[in-house]
Length: 277
Ligand SMILES: CCS(=O)(=O)c1ccc(CNC(=O)N2CC3(CCCC3)c3nc(-c4c(OC)ncnc4C4CC4)ccc32)cc1
View 1 (cartoon, protein in one colour):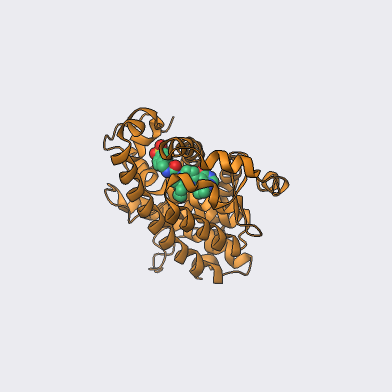
View 2: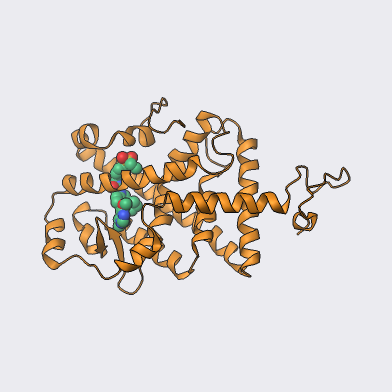
């Protein structure tokens, strides 16, 4: 498009109404490189390691042990795994160019609303479409392992999304840029400086379309935007289940859920764990 024709001079042309900010190709390539690097550094498991573990499946006995856990035991166990995953996502977010320049409130709003969506995107990297298993607790698990969560619709939705994202065969660069795009969303409620979030997002959008253009895969952009809607619906279903679970087991949530829970799903806004150091 017009932006790309500018070359790396970034010359600001007053007549140019399409580009109020000089976004040069060089700068976009720097944004790409930085986001992909941050993704690698904060991805919890490398793709090559997951490939090597591909056929490490839970035995029937191990699956039975998970299925014999009580509902609140299994939720606690999953909560710990999810919290670990969210902490890596928080690290990734903090390294997205421009994220730490956003005001504290907006950083937290984006993380509160986007971290679970990012965990779901990352889950697709840990999914084996040949036997519909996901890497969980050190091995690959089928969805029957999560039976005692009593959330089969939620788990099925998460597995289906992982399957569909896998089918797009995104490379790590595309996963990294898509992840950043999912997080930097200027439409989130309660943002204080929406315009600034929009500008950071614009750069990520350019980086993603630049990468897809270079990989000759522009068709993916439309499919990725469709996936954003699915991420949102799974997260709403997840919050519903969380409310249901908290009504049944208030003590578990209050005392045994990780501290991150109160930050991400609690009402208080002073959030030590998520602040940028
Ligand atoms: C965020 C921190 S927190 O605020 O303290 C917090 C908030 C909510 C909960 C309860 N939800 C929960 O545990 N869930 C939900 C879902 C199922 C679907 C959407 C994500 C999920 N997934 C996993 C998980 C995986 O977690 C890393 N890794 C691989 N597979 C899976 C499951 C097959 C989907 C593991 C836990 C897990 C717990 C903790």
